[in-house]
Amino acid sequence: MPVRRTIAATEGIYFITFTCTNWIPLFTLCNAYDAVYKWFDYLKSQKHYIIGYVIMPNHVHAVVAFSNGGKRINTIVGNGKSWQWQGSDGQCVETTSTTAVSTATLEYYNV
Image 1: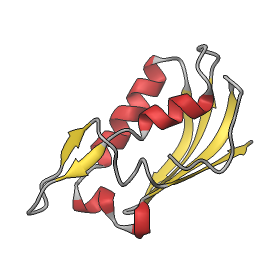
Image 2: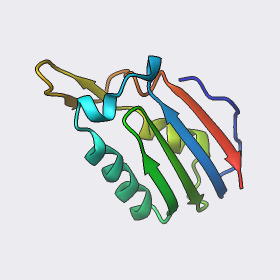
Image 3: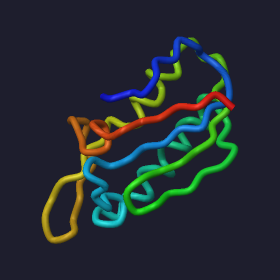
Image 4: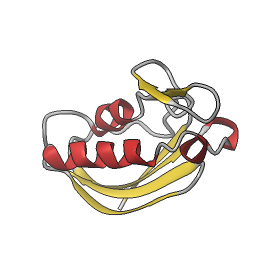
């Protein structure tokens, strides 16, 4: 999982970007927008706060306030990218294998 920067912190406000490999419009092709929303719901259940986001066909931008839950931010975000979208005829299936999103670029900026 490429990460532009390793973050040892367990809390803070960060701007993050997920970019699909080769800029494939994966979120549109797989109708995977709900998967991003599910991940946001999971983050909120773990006491993190989604300040703002935009989901594009091939990338996601988000500003997230991570609370100290004992996990490093890299781990939290890496776990969020552990989906795989596969299938044919526009049908995509969530799995826990390596994915075009998990091999995508991830950028963090401390806000």
